[in-house]
Image (tube, rainbow over all chains, first blue to last red; front, side, top):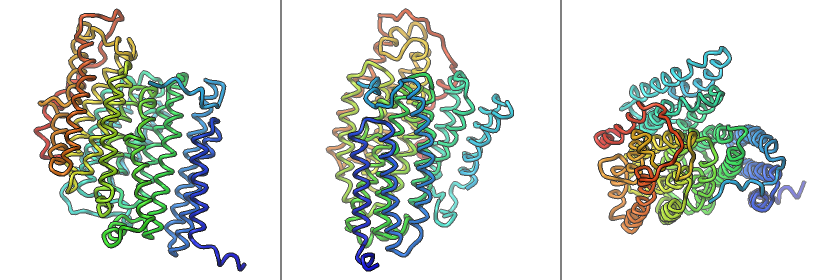
Length: 105
Length: 447
């Protein structure tokens, strides 16, 4: 248990920022729509880690309550997103975002 | 509080009406609810600021102004687009989703807590992802919905990370506590990074450059009535929320951010007006014009002394003009096409539609007796002396804007004629809107 005393807020924040950046870079460089969804989820959960760590640091439970709200909203967002993706797959027969290029100019 | 309850129950009631096969009651029910919300704001108008529900929402003067403006725009959207929504066949779903997103729009005007802000943005956005993709067989609509969903949720995540960092520095989500904290010490690095991230998130939502690139695609691909809703009520709600947050609660940090916002406004005006001149699709051109108006709306943050009047007037003037334009756009788009040549000779086929489109476009361009001119006038006169260079850019880009608005008008009144037939689709409400555009300046003292 000795090691737990040496973890400070900076470490939690570093983990959170790392996950957030993985999410952003995944969104920028991956072409598969489902992987892009996972990257959005990763970004939201990175925020959750930061909020819980801050909440513990301040000894204030507001941050942890907020995490529940974020989880609910993320679930609603994924439900909508997957429905849109299903429809897209039915019409285009692929989940590759390169095929989404009809709107431009 | 009753206002928010009405707007939240409206969506549920609309879904229930579908179960009991009472579709024809939906439009009257929505109109009655909008009237009730306006009556509710009138009753609370002038009362002392009352903070409710554990400091979560506050119906202050700014919130009531915002609610009445958004409700008027929503009611105008409803009466102009009712036939088009009915024609889709699943009007109860669409209306229920619109009502839910309207509830989020109202929440954007009166939050006093960052948790409420996040919930308001999500309630506003999530129904819109569905609405943008609501033309199921149409690939353009699917693509539009998908892009909107992806970029909207990324914007929410970035905004959320900003909220988390501000919470880390101040130990509170309450805007009054944060405001007090910033007045005493605003150089905490987490606050600065958090504020920049919130600014980026909001810039996505209101489609300000350099985070505007999703807007033309989404506006073009979505069904035209939904585009009208996104370009007016949703954009208005997002900028009202941003104004409440940055000009109200975060004013202690505004001196640091004024430069960034001024650069964003400049980029938005130049890019949007420049790109709009290159468009051949009128709907896409209207989308770029909407982005350039977002630049004007964003610049109200820079006017010293909480210039909510200029903001509200601009939202109302731009919203009504934009809704008229999208109504005519929907008529022409569904019968002839969305390209510029579809508008050729429209004045001969339907002098009424051409006249309405002309009034709406001239108002957006900022021609004097119309509301668009006074909206621009209030903003520019507020900025004069503080950001004189910005006002010069605004005037110059408005001249560029004149070019692409007049291009459509010249095509409509030109000699060459498009052979396709065209029938009117409801005259009363566009006329009411046009009268509103012509007389709105008389009411500017009340807004």
